[in-house]
Structure formats: structure tokens, C-alpha cells
Length: 363
Ligand SMILES: NC(=O)c1ccc[n+]([C@@H]2O[C@H](COP(=O)([O-])OP(=O)(O)OC[C@H]3O[C@@H](n4cnc5c(N)ncnc54)[C@H](O)[C@@H]3O)[C@@H](O)[C@H]2O)c1
Ligand SMILES: [Zn+2]
Image (cartoon, rainbow, N blue to C red; front, side):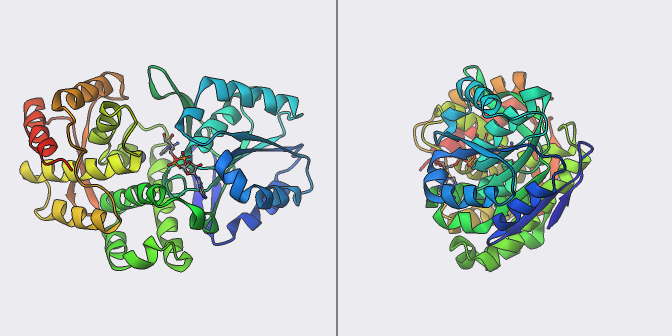
């Protein structure tokens, strides 16, 4: 178990094969709980819904549920409004708990519904993707997309508990698993050189989602994310190190209109670029980029942008990100594996030149 302790409240992260068996105990232990409203990803509901609902019923409190269509498009005003309506009409009050069961999409959407309905009710996160376990479900960021951009409306709302049942990972489609591994590799790269070695050494067991190998890795990632978040709940400083690989990733996602790359795949490409940029500036230890590339390939992740993306479009997306972003465009570079440098002093024309080269090497 990992304890997360941001100023917004302390909570436990339960990690393990079969960890969702803890759900009834967690709900029952919540004093005065009037109801649990489950919000399930449709695909997860099809595969695991009955088991999760049966577990929730064991808590001995009234249960209701909303199923949300799978996919990023559900992080919408429409689905949020629907959740508000269904949470209220199911009979939830201020003492009810929202239980988000799904990947980051459902976690962000249901989390924002919990943050806003009745000005905020309790939330339990039950992430079912690797990405949601190691990234989205810990840290308290919730939100939806609007036509002007991703995650532009949201709130910080820490859960009262997070349940990471590794059994869910067995049904995860391989590409989604890969996207999760990219964030795992990122976490290791910025903060834990030992974890990076583990990812290299145990790649076969890890890619096969063997619980014995995956458990310490997921725990290590939540511990790192928890530590970073505890220091900086509102992303004013150190939390930015989590954005390693994300400066280019966000721009690539925007330039491809969120069509061809999963977020984690874009992050994989972005990490390679940031490592190369750092090496060419003499700020990243030589060989780091090659090592990252090998590791990413081992986890079947792309290391080059898709062919035919225009540099102008990617730069345009970066400039837009800079205008919008909290604190502007910053590069998170690695000094060496496990150690980062954050800088906003990189010349735009240098980035442009390096980017041009990098895009030409596209897959
Ligand atoms: N709040 C944060 O701090 C934070 C951090 C990172 C990402 N995010 C957000 O998370 C979202 C991405 O999350 P994601 O990668 O989990 O995507 P997702 O929620 O879309 O899930 C990916 C796909 O996997 C399916 N799925 C989920 N669990 C499954 C399982 N156990 N078995 C079979 N299929 C399963 C879903 O139906 C979906 O089709 C993005 O919207 C992103 O903005 C938020
Ligand atoms: Zn990310």
C-alpha cells in the first residue's frame, strides 16, 4: 500500500492482483456513506462490470451506476451533464461516493463530476488501465475536454482511496498497455534509475503483465507520483518534471488531431526528442537517448514521429500550448537517467532545427 499525502487530504493506494476485493471494505469504512454511484467505462463494464458491481454491493450500501461510452470523446460537457443528472436522480446526496471504474477517461470525467456535484463529494478511483494506474488516478487532477482544447475544464479533487487491481490489466488491449508502459518509462527516467534498470531487465515478464513483476513497478510509480504531487499539488513547480516528453507529445497529438497516436505513444516519441535535444545541448549525459530508444522499442513503442507531419504545424501547436499552458513552454530534459533539468531558456530556432531533423527520420 502507498500513502499519498497532498495538502488536499491523505489517501491510500491499494495495489495488487485481486485488490478490488478491498472495495467493499473501503466503502463500508466511509462513515455515514449514503450510496455508492459507480461510473463504468462501457468496455470495462462488459468484461468486468458484474464482478465490480457484486463487490460494491457487498459494502452494504445502496448502489447505482452509469456506464459511459469508451473513448476520449466521453470527456465532454455532454457526458458530464449526464453524470450530474444521473448521480442526483439515483438518489445521491452529499454523503454519497462516486466510484470511477475505467481508464483515465472515466477517472477524469467521473472525478470532475464528483468534484462539482453538490460542490464536491467523495471519490474512489478504480483504474483499469496501466496508464490510469501509474499516472491518471493518483494526483487529484480531474477534468473534461472542450472544443478549444483538451483538459481545459476541470478541478483538483483528491480521491479518498485508489484501488489498483492488476487483474484488470490482463484484458487490456496491447496498444493501450504500451501507452501505459511509456508513462512507466517516463516515471523511471525522471526519478528512479534503479526502476529503469528493472524495466530493462524484466521486460518479458512485465510485458506479459505477470502480476509478481508488475506489482512493485506499479507501486514504485504511484509512490513517485505521490511524492511529487505531495510536494506540489497544484503544479506550481516540481510537478512539472512529470511532463518529461510531453512538450513534443502534446504538439504531436494536436498536429495529428488526436487521430493516429495514443497519448503514451506520443510521449514515447517526445522522450526520445527531449533526450536528443538535451544531448545536443550538452546537458544530457551521452548515450541516454539511445538507451531510452532501446527500452521503448522493447515495449513496442514508437520512437519516431509518424511520417509526413509538418514541422510548422508541430511548432504552431507548441506555441499555442505555450500561450495556454500554466507557466508557458518549458522543456524537461534529463541530466542523466533519474535526474531532470527544467528549462525555458532553449532558443526556438534551435528547437525548430532539431525538430525538422527529427521529423525527417519519421517512421
Ligand atoms: N488526471 C490525470 O492526472 C491524467 C494523467 C494522465 C492522463 N490522463 C487522461 O487519461 C486519459 C487516457 O487514459 P487511458 O489511457 O486509461 O485511456 P481510456 O480511459 O480511454 O482507456 C483506454 C481504452 O482501454 C479500454 N479499457 C480500459 N480498461 C480496460 C481493461 N481492463 N480491459 C480492457 N479494456 C480496457 C477502454 O474502454 C478504452 O477503450 C486521457 O483523457 C488523459 O487526458 C489524466
Ligand atoms: Zn502523460
